[in-house]
Image 1 (cartoon, rainbow, N blue to C red):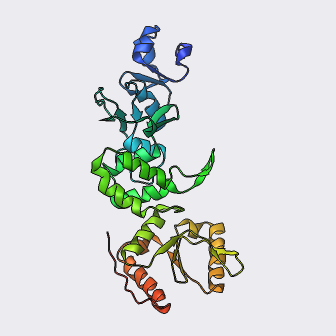
Image 2: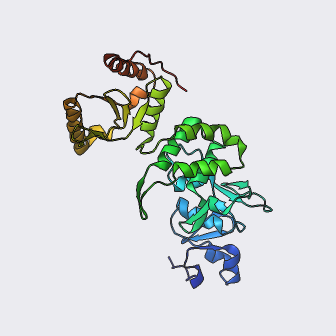
Image 3: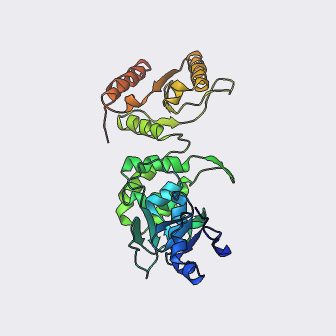
Length: 317
């Protein structure tokens, strides 16, 4: 099998339009060669493999009007939002007026006026900021609990090239919400902002916190170190019930299958017992019926033993 003829040097970046190719003397037969993919009509990508999501985004931007950017669920994928993606084949884009929203196969177009700090550049193209993507989804597809889960994910500090920082701060989310012109999301966004917390390590931890608060549990402290009388850290639980010597930790399957994690868990619960603190270990079955009823009974029992007079009631929402 003969090797395809070389492409012009300006196409070394990997993405070019059919119009550009034809103007440089690259004929239709060369564009049909096995080393070129066609993610969208009129766009070519130098790749012998199925294009990745990022490559498809970069290719699509070649045929969009100036000021356009990847948005909504597609921007959320770039930030790895912990949500269920409804359509992984399509790419969402936003274009500014007076341009019309694009109508292409596997493209979902949006049209709105935006300000400069609502989008950013990375991976070689423009896309919504983390704050903007959160607002876009809150106004279109996220239920309240999902908006809180994503909010917790965004404000959790993480290691980055610029140091230990979150994808967005809670103040940045509030400011973006105040400036948003999309009133459809106002109710969900406002309710979510009241319930987002920093230092949450996983969506299941968020789900556990919301479950307990809706059941009427006393106030919860999120991922704060618990110290002994000499100021030494005993443990840093996922949740601690304020005013009571009760901690709760969500344990995913890796707590069972990873030996190092299992040994850390054993030591942690020894430390809790030594400090006369009740440590409750929570699993996935505890968060949904029927397991949630037994779990809440266990929490109720520990609260009763420590003098609480309230009653927990399961509320799904």
